[in-house]
Image (tube, rainbow, N blue to C red; front, side, top):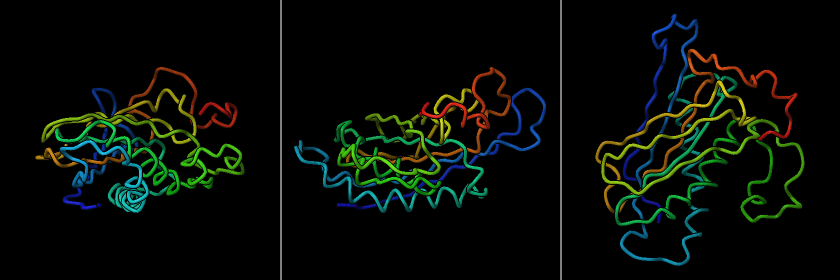
Length: 213
């Protein structure tokens, strides 16, 4: 059921946008895996089994993206995910990426909760010390033609309200998705927009705002 056709990686270093050159550039990266959509061209009522099969794909992509960005793990400050479904698929096929993609990055970055508990909706098991990567991973998805672009949202890994780190990265895989493909995407960055200056909660103050996830 899992057939990876291509993997596309994009990394950028942003030094300035009209203003002074940043002492340290913002590093943003995205990785897209182009997979065959096993449900293309038909309605399948039970698509959930594919979600578990995507778990190792997500883990591999998260590690590949971190390696491509070539920064220490502790410098990763934001994350996001997305999916572009080919025209013979449906938007719900992209939703299969929510758990495998999101938790792959969260676990890479130090989250220590129970992925299985969250997948199963077992509230009583959603306790303990989750460690890092506390925030929900923002997401977007669409059905689109080959070469379609997707703006993948990025927010702070521990508190979604860090205004200076609200961002997005445009991801486009040339020639994908074909009608029978899905592009699954992960994205991360090292933090603040290069000239962030609109105030709001700072990442260093997150502990004062515990619970704003």
